[in-house]
Amino acid sequence: MEETRRVRIKAGSTVAQDHHVSDWPRTKAGDVTDPGMEFDAEWNGTFWECRADGYGRRSWKGEVGRYGNGSIFAFGEDSVEVLE
Image 1 (cartoon, one colour):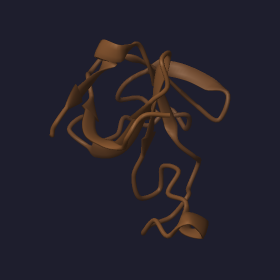
Image 2 (image 1 turned 180 degrees about the horizontal axis):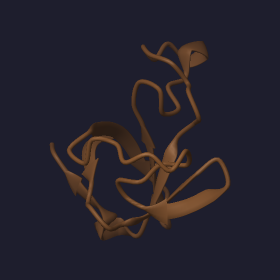
Image 3 (image 1 turned 90 degrees about the vertical axis):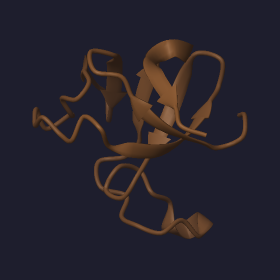
């Protein structure tokens, strides 16, 4: 994977979380979350793996926050706005 970038997922982007596919900002639970939420993300050539508190934080790798339902995967390089 590429370096970690700070991103926002663009509204309407196709995302997946824990084997469930939806359009952002709807999550696996069906809830509409904060559309302006910021994530730490890595691009793998197909999707962005987006992590934040409650969305896939990996405490075992020293990341601060909870794992929750896991990372949100945003499909397509242009599915996020890179902030830095």
